[in-house]
Every structure is written in structure tokens, then in C-alpha cells.
Image (cartoon, rainbow, N blue to C red):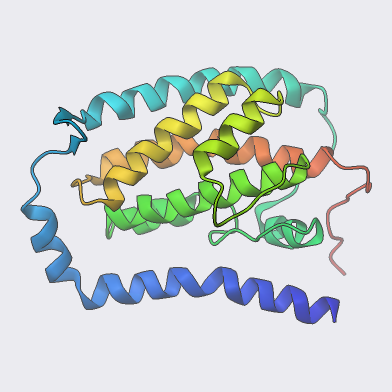
Length: 223
């Protein structure tokens, strides 16, 4: 039964990217025409959303977060970290939802070369799953239908489960991704910058899965 469960979870994790790719290829011209009509983003109240400015803020925050988590990771220097090939298996083992990308951000970088907007839409879903898994791991009561990702991030911040700059970075990445989902034209370079900035959040989450539980996790041994 355990093997069947793992297989089922992997299938569920892989279904949505396949659907996204199919829709992107099937309606490529329609999507391009729609995005071509959108020249700028407007927030409620008529306030402009400066995409390049927000992406630059994301890059700066990502560097700050990297400095914050490096010290924590130094404490576990020499201990094995979960390889990306085992990330989803570890998520399932811990009772979490698997990642559509297997927590491998290169998946979205490759997809961004075809459709930057859809790549950020996928990244947004992955970050959403990451945050909900993190909240569950810290014992938060998560109602996926009623609790927003913003509320969960605030709960994690208030309980000292994440740093303030991690909170800010996640919020800003989600804001940019939301603009992509809502039709703001995104270039490949913009998408690449956001995806690479998100890697620091994913890396810290993987470190937490590697060392944050008392189950003496060890990497799988080949042969």
C-alpha cells in the first residue's frame, strides 16, 4: 500500500505540468495575442505595478536571505542533504504534498524559454505548496480552502518559523507571479531572475527536510 501511495502522489504531482504544456501549445497564438494587448499592469485604485522595480527588490532580498540561511546551514556542515532526485519521496514520507517540479527550479527555467508567464504561474503553485507544507510541518492548522498563502506566511513569521526577509521575499515573489498569472507580459530574463531568486527559499526548505526531523534521514543507497 505504501508503494501504491507513493506512485499515486507522483502521478498527481506530474499531471498538472503536462496539462499546462498541452494548453500552452494548443492555444499559443491566442495567449500571445492576449498578452500583446496588455502594456502595463494596474493595481486596484489605478496604482501602477512597476515590474522591473519589484524584480530588483526580489533579487536584493534573495541575496539577503542567502546570507541569513548560510549561517544556519553551516551548523550542519558535513551532514548529507536531500538530493533533488529524492525530494518528492521525502515530501511524501513526511506526509507533505509533493512538488510539481520535484523542487528543481531548472524545470521552470527551461519552461520560461518557451513561455515566461506560464513558468511563473508554475513557480507560484510550487511556492504555494512549499509554504503549506512548511506550515503543516510546524503544526499549523491549515485549511487549504479558507487559509490564504499570505495568512500562512504571516503565521510562520509570527511563530519564528521563518526570517522576516524570507517572509518578504516569498511575498514579493508571489506578487510578481500573480501579475504573470493575470496577464502582465513577462520576458525570459525577468522570469529567469525571479526563478533564480526563489532558489534560496527552496534550498532552505530542502535543508529543513534534511535536518529538521528526528527520523535520522539518510540518502538512498544505490545497489
